Each structure stands twice: as structure tokens, then as C-alpha cells.
Amino acid sequence: MPSFSPGAIAFAAGFIALVFLLGAVFSGDPADSPRRRWMLLFAVALVPGLALALGFGMSLEYMKRPQFCGSCHVMLPFANDLRDPESGTLAAVHYQNRYILEHQCYTCHTDYGLFGPMRAKLAGVRHLVNYTIGNYTEPIRIREPFRNANCLHCHGEAKVFRTAHTDNLAELQSGDMSCLDCHRPAHPEERAAR
Amino acid sequence: MKGEGLLRASALAIAAALLLMLVCAVWPRPPQLGLFLGLGLPLAAAGIAGFFLYVLRDLRKRRAL
Image 1 (cartoon, each protein chain N blue to C red):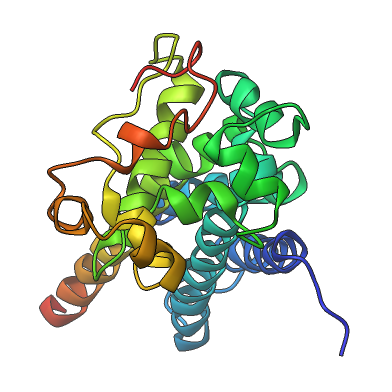
Image 2: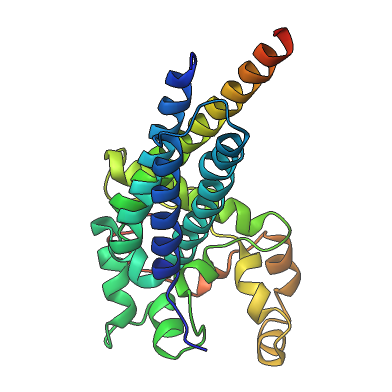
């Protein structure tokens, strides 16, 4: 079965919905006919609603890709650092060693738990809107301190991690000590204020 | 039919949202996605709300007949 990109699926759905919508609303059918009422329900509410939901899903899917993060100029230094063979930042080490296979930015910057992905997606939408209307100052700053839980989600149960962190495991788990206190910088520091 | 203006305005708002979505699908870049999510989706929500208002008005009018 051929695989289609999210963009292609959203484009096809959006195009069909748009043609259907304009056709139904501006058709010459008598306004009171039952056929037109059913058409309107589908063409104005149901089909566009479904298409827009697909478009929303497509947007969220694109927003998870590191290429997308790097396409904002404020993020370019961070995206370039990921691929810089000379870089020793945490992000570059994780990216270049393929510790995270895909959605690398999203994976580390998403809180885990029931509402973590939803919060991350809402934050992404807020970033996009602020970027589009120019509501930001440089250098950009992380909104709140990076949570150890995001590191521990992958590393927390690893034998090598637990062996190396026996002395401070409790502090790391409680958040009294940050992973970044020892393992820094996460990103090029001249661009990112912690 | 009286009240068609609301229907057309709703349809145009939803059509604008769909157009922004098509642009996003072709050029999925931050400004386009920002416009779609920040302007297109609220427009669509307003359009769908307008459509339901149109339906309610229509139902009320039929009941009055």
C-alpha cells in the first residue's frame, strides 16, 4: 500500500472539503429543499470539520520534526548544533549517536504523563503564533527549568545510569538536583539562557 | 431566503480556514502553520458556530410557521 505524507492527505481532504463547501452553499438549489439542508450539514460542518481535524493533525506531526524546529531563524543555532560534528552539547550527542531515532526536539522537550504531550503541543502552537506575529525577544529563553523527569524517562531505569548515580539518585528523582548541573551544556550556551 | 447572509459568512470563514490549511499542506513552515493554527482554526470555529446559529434560527422559524 503506498504511503502518503501527512501534507498530501491533508491537502486532498482540504481541497475536497473546499469544493464541496462552496458548491453546496453557492449552488442554485432551492433554499428550503430537504436535499440542500442535508448537503449543508455535510458540506459546512461535517466534511470541513473532518478536513480541518486532519489539517490540525498534520500540523502537529510537522511540528514534531527537528527540521521544522530549525526552520525558525531563532532556532537555527540549536538546529545547526545538532549536526555539528565538533559539538559536545547534550543535544548534539543524543542526535548524532541516534539515541533518539526521530522527533528529537519534541522527545526531550515534552513532559511525560497524562497531560505532558498536550501541554507540549499547546506550547508549540503558542511558539508558532508568537513567531508569526514577531512577539519574541532574542536570545530566546526556556520558559521554565528543564525537568529531570524528561531525562529520567529514558535513562532512569538504565543499569548504567543507576550504577553511576547511586549517590544522588534520590536528589535527581525529587528534582533537588538538576541533571544539567553536571551534564551541560544541553545546547550552545551563548544562544540559550537557562 | 432570509438569513442566507449568516450561512454565506460562515461558509466563507470555513473556506478561508481550509485555504490556509491547503497553504500549510504545500508549505509546512512556521509562519504558515502559525497562521493556520492561530487564525484559520479560530475562523473555522466561528464559521461552524455561525452555521449552527443559522440552523437554530431556521428551526425556530419553521416552528413558528
